[in-house]
Length: 461
Ligand SMILES: Cc1cc2nc3c(=O)[nH]c(=O)nc-3n(C[C@H](O)[C@H](O)[C@H](O)COP(=O)(O)OP(=O)(O)OC[C@H]3O[C@@H](n4cnc5c(N)ncnc54)[C@H](O)[C@@H]3O)c2cc1C
Image 1: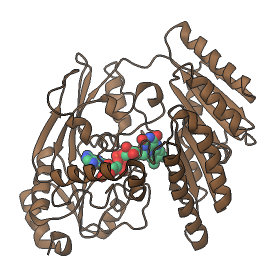
Image 2: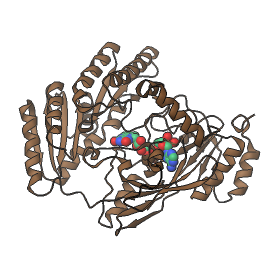
Image 3: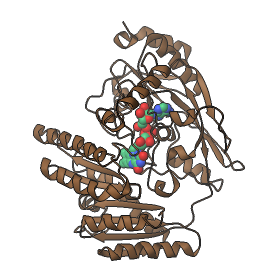
Image 4: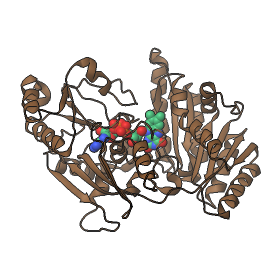
């Protein structure tokens, strides 16, 4: 019998005795919010306990205990994940890092050493006080943790130019399944000693170890940006203008919203967006000096040449931020129309027009509403499938569309997930994308690091 079958009070008492100052929550009313992440997986289990670690040593003690009793551990940051990666399992524990919130900024080396529980926005603010910038900016930056960002290798809006989380991770401290704490990389801007193990853990979605400290590379603050916003009456014109821009320059942002998401945001924010437009693009240039104006003019011209019905350019920071905020709000806005099945498919940029038209066909065939937003400059889209769980037929059609969209992305040489991770919701499609040999390799790595399979079981693999 494993701990999973029989995790009872005696095991929890043993852990509490070893960690007298750590909160171990067992009241189901208190643990309920820790059962699911933002994906709201209906198959979520009920954790036997939620453990609030305060330091690496706490995490080590929890993992030694879990390993000894073969108790499943689901690591959790802020629970904003969109792939069911932080979904609790029956009889296991959720290990939350929300109380691990220290940050030390070194402006000389331009690094920050952070604990995982700090929110992305808090990291940005702390390093800005030292005149520095941590670029990765998921739309959820005010509600997601930096540990969750490292565990999912999060992307975001400025990542088209500045790169994703892994590009800023110089080092990690990770607690392994057996409680061993290892330091990988560190505050060195160049370091090729040994295998690239730091990169292995970035994006490992809590399946290989628990990240308890991250060393981040920082850069000087982002220069002021010009923002170009355009509306289109045809999807094809919008996607053609995306390719016209990315062929020549790398903008600091190039975001896409379709008509359904424009209207959902307009319903919520009432900011005067063009409800009749089939698509809206929001682009930014932050190149230094006169290049910024030149690039903004080039983007505006590319949009106009592809029949934009309206093009608006501004150098005003607040105006630019208002459009960026509208795009960031798209997921919660569409969610107000009904529960979502949330996709994260990406393709090589030239295949973007085919992906978007294919998604529209799937939506029509399955008779479901699919709103699409995208980090278009990366080819990374978020089709949001709205459904009503009380309508069994619609829910079944929504799930079919969910799979067909991933099949389409794979057929176009793309990925089932550009930034949210595989989690529990997309794992059935992972073998189709990566193939049998890579699945075998992945399993061998998992078995080597977590032989009892206690770290986030059921996620990714
Ligand atoms: C409105 C909205 C917009 C979003 N926009 C974006 C976006 O633009 N780009 C983007 O990339 N994502 C986006 N996301 C998804 C989400 O915010 C990111 O995936 C984020 O990185 C998750 O961080 P979290 O702290 O909430 O992690 P959680 O949801 O708590 O966990 C995510 C995964 O990481 C694991 N994990 C968490 N902490 C640790 C740790 N310390 N050690 C090991 N494993 C750990 C968990 O087990 C789980 O598998 C969005 C989400 C929402 C709700």
